[in-house]
Every structure is written in C-alpha cells, then in structure tokens.
Length: 212
Image (cartoon, rainbow, N blue to C red):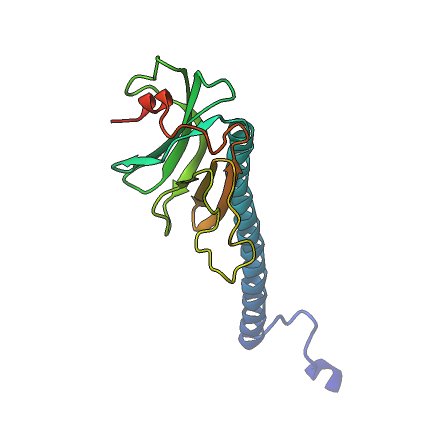
C-alpha cells in the first residue's frame, strides 16, 4: 500500500537539519551575549564616571568652605612630585595646607593639613584625605594663586571683555583630574578668599608647614 511508503512521524531529523538548527542557535546566543556584555560595560562605565565625579565634588565642597573665609593664600610650591599651597583661616592663627602627592604609578592623593601657627605638622604626619586617584594630565601645577590687584584672566587682551578688571581679593585656582580605570573627570575652579585684600601681606607664618 502507498500509505506504508510515507515517512513516519518519529523518523527523527536529518544531520543537515540538526546542523542548521545549531547554527541558528549559535548566532542567536552570540547576539544575546554581546547585548548583555554591552549593557554591563555601559553600566560599569557610568558607575566609574560617577565615582570619579563624587571624589572631586566632595573635595571641592571642603575647599569652598575652607577657602572662602581664608585671610591669606601662599604662593604654591613643589617638592619633587608633591605640590602644596598654604592658607590661613578667618582666624589668622589657624593654618591649613592642601598637599597633592603623586606616586610612581601617577595616582595622586590630595590631603588637607591643619595646625595652629607655631606648631606645624612634623614630617610623615598624615593629613585628611580629600580626594584620591588624581593624575597630573597636561597640568604643570594643580594650584595657581592670583594675587589681589591682578587680573584673574590667564591671557587678557585689550579687546577682551573685562580685561581691565582686577580683583581686590586673593584667589586660588585649583585644577584636578581624577581617573578611575580608563575614565576620567576634570575640574577647574577658582576660589576667592573673602578675608583678603590688596593690603594682605605676601608673607605669613603659615608657610612653616611646607614639606621639605
């Protein structure tokens, strides 16, 4: 009978059908895996950038509070791979220093030191960590002081708007770059010391805390 020559339902699949099915499944698995990896990569990048920004923001919150009422700002200095700048608080007997120390791997730690004038911290005394993972990318110094009476602009010209303006206060420009993995974030901000003036002396005993 002709019905007996037909292929039964439980005859299985041919080798070609199995290989085609496996090939399609492999392609779908590659697409699915790539999508998952991309999602995780994007999430990790966003988290890294957020962490770097948080480091800088926390540091600058302290700077704003400490530097806004400063009564004197020193000319920044450098010893090897350590950058520093001192400033006196609203109470001129209270001294503080921002110190950025970079290691062999380039990652730096920004610290804040406090002391009463006449009792500077001894060598090796740790300060309060303000921010970490800081790198010196295309910056000669993280600290730049602008003296009272000077133009706050880096390259003023006769045609520039406000080029003739001169501040009555001492100002401190801070430039920091924080890097986490391959992601980095930069901050360039200038703080104005409201308790300074053009009559503020250039020298101050708070410079006694400079590293040697």
